[in-house]
Image 1 (cartoon, rainbow, N blue to C red):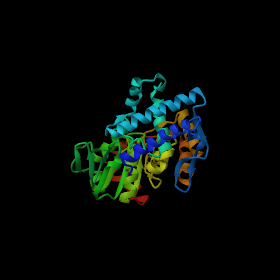
Image 2: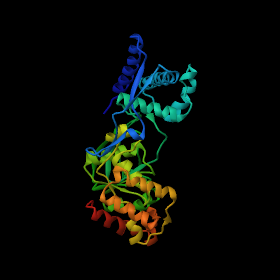
Image 3: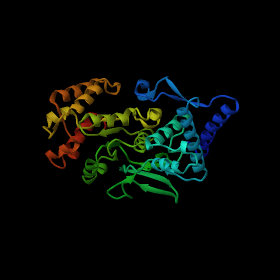
Image 4: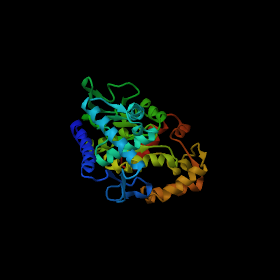
Length: 361
């Protein structure tokens, strides 16, 4: 695990490199992987998205490039001081904090700009923003299941059982899950659930207790912290991961981000992605077999499905068969459409059957 001292040293080394270039009479520059879709590659060996070989250079030989390096230098100073003081801030706060910097040219024009710069610093230093003590806004994602953890807080350590010591809402995943220590567990598998309504149904029906299941609420497109703890649960506790999502192309991409990583965070795929995760969500064949309530595919749904047929993450016999079936029937369905067969159907029949067929339970 990266320490605060390690993170600060990486930042200072980067700033020192800028200084050395100045002192040596060289125009300062910073080299980065080209962050475009065309430079993202699917690594078949590791099963995750990674950057390709193409790079771009942020150089002070242009006004635009000089501004970018100036903003990087101010941000490095801010982050290093933050680590010195053992403080933290949000990505949103960084954007507003730049308004107080003494050089107008160093201020950010938008939060997207400041977010991108933090990602640049992650890539160049090899340190995650969590280790810089940078937080996104709270995602609200939670855990519920037979897992005992030790959590590091500003008020010291505390032990929490994610079933016995929490309310119905579960244990909220912190911004940096690497501050959690797994002490003990009785988990047979983890189920990463897309929607809050389905997560609540599983907990109310006692699915986590009956099947020794850790229920991870993804809360839609999962935050980095959610994907990180999912990977840690798989790798460190050696339990299967299944992703339970809606039956539409956007939910398939939610599964893809958990299993293979996302294009935006390709530099962290090996840290965040869990290639062994399996999809247990609503399949197009389920829509047909169970005659589930459904909606017609929109034009954007069709375009997304056709795009997924060209996506290496989905170029398997299973996904090609399901996507082609969905295009053929022209329908999509939500997880909660299973309630058309009764509130207990999902926990008594659907999930046990699907997970049993997949060899998870």
